[in-house]
Each structure stands twice: as C-alpha cells, then as structure tokens.
Length: 165
Image (cartoon, rainbow, N blue to C red; front, side, top):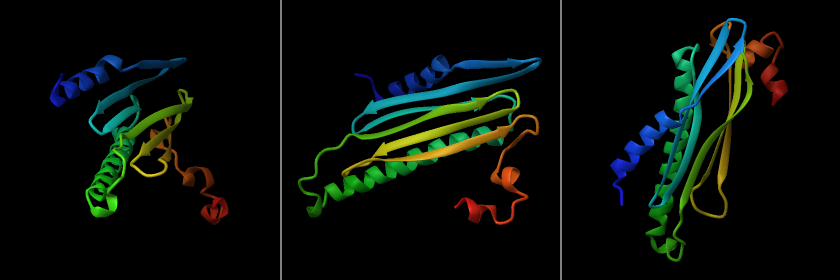
C-alpha cells in the first residue's frame, strides 16, 4: 500500500510523463500546449483533472486556467467537508457513506496560429441527490497577445450585456 506522499509523487510524475505536446503549424507560426493531468482515488475522494497550458501566451492566461481548476477543486473539497460535518450530527444519522467525485476536462474549439478557444468542464458530486457542473470558456488572441473578452466582440454595441442576457 502506497502512502499519500508516494501517490502524490507518482501523480506529479504522471503530469510530466503524461504531458502531451501538440503542435499546430501554419507557415512559421507554431502553437504548443501541455496537458496537465492528475488522478487520485483515495478514501472518500475520486478526482480526475485535465487542463491545458499554452506556450506563446501571457503567463496570466495560463495562471487563470490553473486558478479556475484549483478554485473549483477547493470549493468541491469544502462542500464535501460540509456534507461530512452534517453526517456527524443527529440530523445526518442514516446518511450513506459517499465517494465524492470531481472531474475537470477540456474540449478544444479553435487551436490555430491566430487564436486559442476551448471550454473547461468541471463536474462534481458532494453528496445528496445529484451532482453539479460548471462550464468555463477561455479565448485568447495570439496575434494581439491577450485574452478575447466580450468587449472585444460586442464593445461597439450599446448595452450588449443586457441584450445577451
């Protein structure tokens, strides 16, 4: 039986070993990405995480991707602790033992020399009748070296947020 530290070391190694380098070529432009992957199944947790990190972008873009995953995972773990606290009260008597699950995965939409566009999906189960999910969109203009925002797309349209909602 491996210790948690050994599993985490293997998980860190898996990120390096499993990391994928994908290249998209067009003339002299090259986009490279690394997919960070982590899986852990221990005790009451079953987690599976996969998200991209890109070269040729501002560091803040990659940090925002990682922060989104880290924040979602932290919120998931906090919610599971809340569920476990309820299970230990008289009101929680008879609640089943749960295996709490969290996954993060991504789907590319446009990975070209001009732009990066992908969707990050998180899903989780923190006890109760059903789980939940969150969807995050990431878009980056590689020529302008900046994230693409709604202002970039609709900036000249008056009250565009009201119209969209």
